[in-house]
Length: 134
Image (cartoon, rainbow, N blue to C red; front, side, top):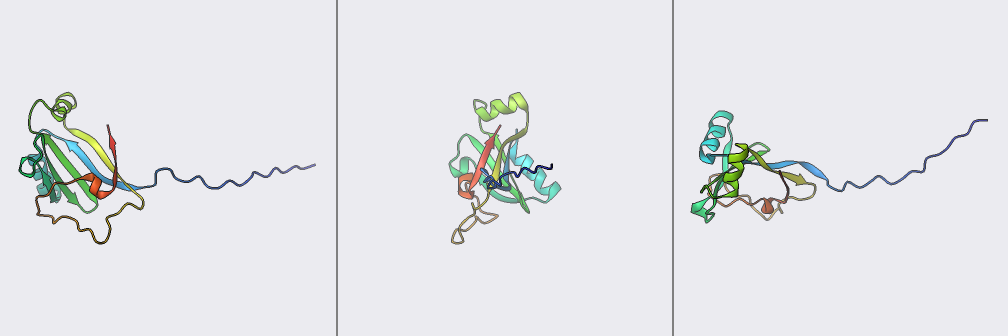
């Protein structure tokens, strides 16, 4: 006698964190200006934004560069008494934050992205990302 058991069909589990990919990667580096110049000349990245003493950020300088869908934020400390400087001293240059793009989180059509040559303060909150810190 053959017995067949039917497995009850359950609703597909909803994805608790729907991701579309990586929005940006932030590197802590010793010299962000030199690193940005290297990525632009060697790999063809374009300047997107800048944050530093000129824009009111006193503890760090960050250069945002982009190539196609890849966005890097290169951050360097302005003083040695800084958590970023401590991190670089302990671990060297490397990735500190990865911003993950979530599904359904896009800029509204009325919002404009900053001009590639403009010196603006870049904020991951404005882009609708989820930050993962190491």
